[in-house]
Length: 200
Image (cartoon, rainbow, N blue to C red):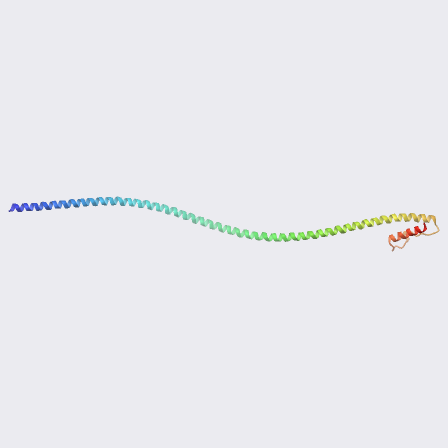
């Protein structure tokens, strides 16, 4: 009986050992699977971290580039605003200059019109002076012709007076200078000629 009991106990122990071995093998396999899974997850995590680092680097680069573009745009905007301010000031100055030039043009136009009026007045005055000068020259010519005629007539009268005095010395014939000075020269000359013609 003791042998049977010992054998049964041995079998039981053997079975327990086998089951324990199987359990240990299963645990070892599970641990190995877990280790493989951890290694795989670690590799995957490392790859994801590297990818994330690369994406972060690209994001920083894009952000830096975008910030640079924004800064450039802001600088350009400030430059354009300053240019607009300068152009607006230039426009104000130009408008002021245009207004001043327009005023000067109006003043110059008024001065030109005044000078034109003065030129017309001077032209009319010159025409009047020329007409007066022409009339004076005509009068001078008439006076010269009359003086020439009078001198010629005086010569003729003196000649006839001398002839008459020589022909009829008993008569007295007044000479032209001895006649009334208030009479005109033409009347005196005509009277002398009339006397000469009467006695001729």
